[in-house]
Length: 113
Image: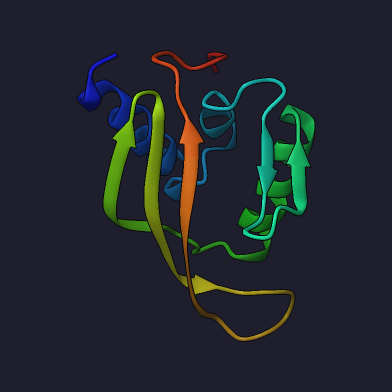
């Protein structure tokens, strides 16, 4: 798997997030995908849960977007420095959130929309 292909998959997923295109976004997740927070707490497991989580994010924050100033990979794994300048928890004020996401990739989406 070429480095450019691995990174391109993750960047395409981020583009789908920024477009708030839920079906295109889900195409980049395996049916049994697991999303955990930085402390290992389960956020979503499986397509239905990921769809529900992302739908709530997009509904609660209609202008949310992610920037990625740094991306690197080792094999099929990609680490990406995500910055969301307009994150909001509940009804609280917007603030910047940053994290490093670690994603295992494949060359093709798991589903097509």
